[in-house]
Amino acid sequence: MATTGPDDHEPVLRATLAPDEQLRVQARARDAVLAVSDRRLIVATRERVVLSVSFNELRRIQFDIERDRPATMVIVPEEAHHEPQVLAIPPEEFSATAEALALIGRQIARFQPPGQTATASLEP
Image (cartoon, rainbow, N blue to C red; front, side, top):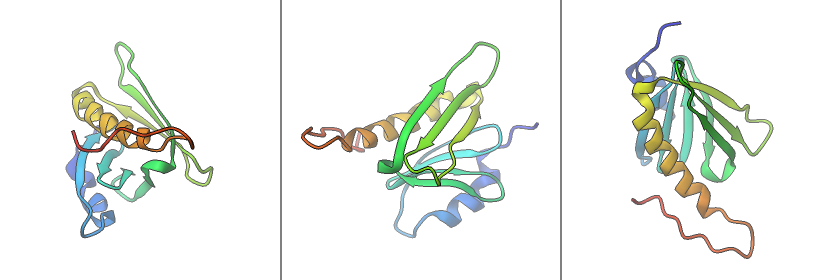
């Protein structure tokens, strides 16, 4: 399967953003684009948005890097009606993906169980 660029997904991605929503970072996967806005995480293919969830709706993100193959990112939403996403991330997208993971991680850290204090912020 051919790897596609973020521009292939741009119309679908832009159509899903609210007028006042800011796109912070996007990274290309083999068949989709991973985007992080100031409000949510979005996974879009050329045809449609396959996942769009706020940060507090994320249960888990796993990122595995193996030698001689694309990395694997698994995104598991909290609610079962949002289908988990498995993305193949090529090595040339590791930097953008790391930036996306850092932004997401800071947001997830803000949603602590009752009785714990959150200290993370989306701002670097």
